Length: 478
Image (cartoon, one colour):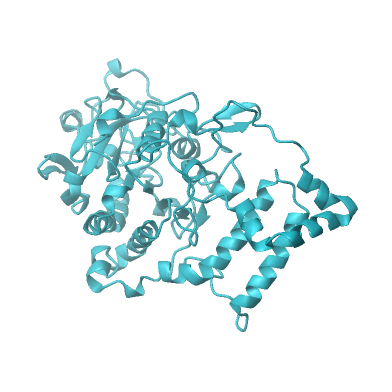
């Protein structure tokens, strides 16, 4: 993965193992396997998720990425703009130039925020009344108010946040991180994705896909409800010993007819092994019934409107606690009515979505800190872009990729600070603007990965998450 001698990354088209497997109906491979411990040799060859050392001492060991599908309005949540109160109902000044979004052309009146902002914590950060619980945690948060992306359309912008490119087919951030670091758990997936139960985001599976990386590094989807993992329990009457014998035989057959370069088959073999181990260990990891009443209340499991998202946040804590490297939780997906995409009825939309997530997210931060996990877990809150200061239909906002807010907590991030700014109307990032390459470079740095040493040869090019390079946001580092 990281050759030190500058040697070639090209492997022979056919290896000696391939010859043994394919010549004389595979009897050569059978003879070789009889001389080895087949279970041990198989595990050594396909354990692509074994833990790997970072490039330098990391601040964080794991990541929880809270992705708000459809894009909350930064102007109504974490980036107050008093000028919008002053110019409410007026047109955007000509000095701002032409602004064209997905559905509007910049010729609609400015719209002030329907919510009040108030300062919280020792740091005095201003937070909207939409987030009364997260507001209590501002001293643990680092706000970056100057991110930007390059598309006004949901899916391409989601791809850029998740993979670094606006086109699908590139490895997701979680895939790159598990490729670089592996997993700290042999019995749970390294990379877990928990979508909204109503459906996936517009970008779909490419948001957590492995792209051209070996398929073993793609995200494992957990569903909502009491059984997040499908078919976790073995069929009735099937003993672990019988499953083990069946799996050993199946994998010996798969390996006899598989080229070393066949990453899809390697991923399948690895998934079979992981699934077998998960039957013994995952039931305990996803069983939240033993959590005490105080913890369940902390995440909002005792309230109908917060219970579902709170359950996923609680699962995220249990997973990183047990060694899962990267967890991504999507708030929103499927029908527009369950997304943050407030083209109309901004008040109803954001009050609904904030009501579902505010308490569980604050509970997650509190729980991680109480358990001593926040220092080693990087928590990210963000979306694919922000919203425009102009109105859409009089009571909504269109997409704004030119400047928006994300916040971070734990994992080596400096708490209680704000980095960057948008202009006085919140349209564009003007102070310390940061591209998604900077976003990704900083996350890799916090995990002990140097962006230029984490690469994969694809179509003759050394591909990286940050493409031709991002700048680590130094002000974020504790």
